[in-house]
Image (cartoon, rainbow, N blue to C red):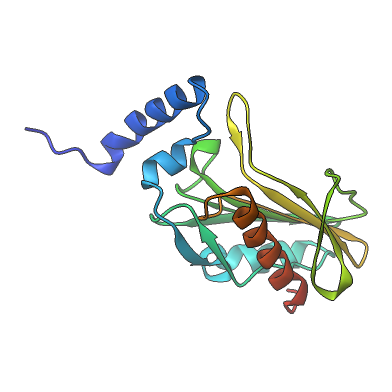
Amino acid sequence: MRRLTAARFAPLAALAAGALVAAGACVDSTQARSGGAAREVDVRAALGAHVARAAARSEVPVRLPARLLLDYDGPVYGSGTGSRRSWTLSLAGAPRCGANACFLAFFSGERGGRPAFTRRVALARGLTGFYKPLSCGASCSPPQIQWLQGGVLYDIQAKVGVAGAARQRGALVAAANEAIAAQPS
């Protein structure tokens, strides 16, 4: 009898998650693959040298939360880039992730950017956040929060490891507040 390893299980999990989405359930393949187990991730450690590289290429300060509770219990891989007016950093459940199946979190900063959402939330230092909850259609889009600080639009989108709309919003507000208060790179 062949043992079902994680590599052999991943396609089955993606297929099962796709079937659930088609049936109207809001589940994504990362959640199905991880078994729904949440874990707190040290964001800077997971992103490693990508933070310094993005900061070196960009005039936009890099602001990140110290930690983030993600709906994933496997290894986490970082990636990122920077340009003069922006930077992006990502966490994924697979190296060189190019698909939403392995997406875990996204962080960005863009000088002169404008918020894409209208739902407002109060943030640290009197700032206003713009929040988008988890949404599902053909696939699910994780909750996201944006805020303006020093002429820069900051953005965090993550598959947070908590259930319920209010708790997901609270997790992203806490992450944004940590990023707002953090010493930028």
